[in-house]
Length: 315
Image (cartoon, rainbow, N blue to C red):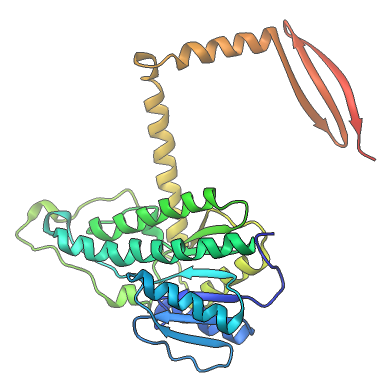
């Protein structure tokens, strides 16, 4: 059992002092769940079912201590939601290695630290949920995002790996927020490229975004209900039409590139010959199972002739 459906949950929320993380905590406390709100600046919740802690996610020992305090107070942790992160809007040419490392330390390694610390606990109790806020730029890129997009793409990969590795005892999902007015990301402002660098002026992107009017508290409410009420979580949950649109455009581009790349397999791979031989062999002889309504059959094909045997009928 990966999820304790319809039972009070204890949520461990990072980046809880502001923005999306704060909204998560606010709604969950109103719902009646236990909330552990962690951030460098201690969150301001005072309800009995809350535990507010000053935690720097780049410090593994602080995370470990916070998890121990959570278990001591609430007895368990059911859901980890990673929201801690910072943004950056700098062209790759102007980026510095130190700034890139600092951003990766929070956005990627900070999340890695919380996941790494909680997986053993989830494995021991045989259930748990890990949810990572990766933003739409964890799937799609943007201008001036060499550091930010790199960190979020890395986080998407980490989420996917964890989802595979922990599938027997844990759920994992990334939610990719589009642009939301009033969030901390927007308040940080946009880095303006110097006008003298004409190569960076009026650059085109593959996205012609039609933005929708989104409300952050309703979006968080939607995410919470998906986590609470679905046994199986999607690998990606895109929040906002802009996020969905960008992901769709990128997915089409990947499929287009895959089709282009496949043309060149014949120069370095035996795949084409193998594929042809497999089709011929399947025509000459194959065995497969099929199900029509509640009747199961075994289908044997010999030189194109299909012979069907009824194997079972569901009562």
